[in-house]
Length: 232
Image (cartoon, rainbow, N blue to C red; front, side):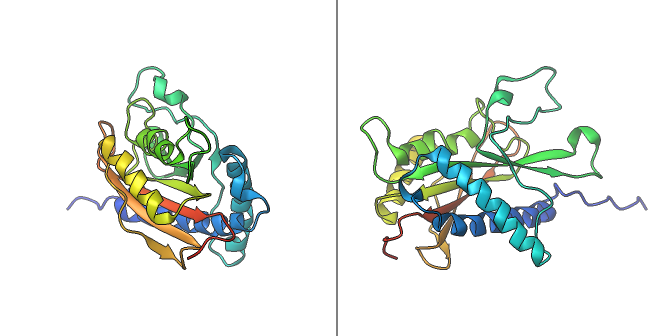
């Protein structure tokens, strides 16, 4: 009888467990973000900066109850090299908003690191005629997990999008995002389940087909309502 294989963190069950811990920390961080002053109208880069600081606080809270992660994500870091490529590929220069390195010390050295990629976008009414937020969420957000030019989440089975809802009704945002997703051949977002109520965090999912590993790809969506006066 052959010896049983040592489970890898990249196996489905272990990856799912780590992903849920990452998403739990993100949800806790987004709740803290909502309490930040003047966040409802700020540009994406400033919101991302505040979110990272909220992640540090949220992870400290989780650590106090024995549920913290051993490190925070790296903001604005380039994609990891793929060990199967002989030289640097153009997509390695692309920069997701956050990447969470997940290391399996029992895996072969060249295959021991993956990155859980997170891309963040604002959602709501267009701030100007040539900047359609709900379209940007798809074209320069979701598509980057599916296109060869960016390869976000390369060699991973899942990743995440964070949506900052700054204006417009939730229902209208979903309709518009799904319309743009269909136009670009991407899976629509599933009906939401909430972590609390609509004023809190809303979770959605979509499936992407890719020409690089891993496909199909499960894209998680965490949307936070940033308007303090928004109705449930």
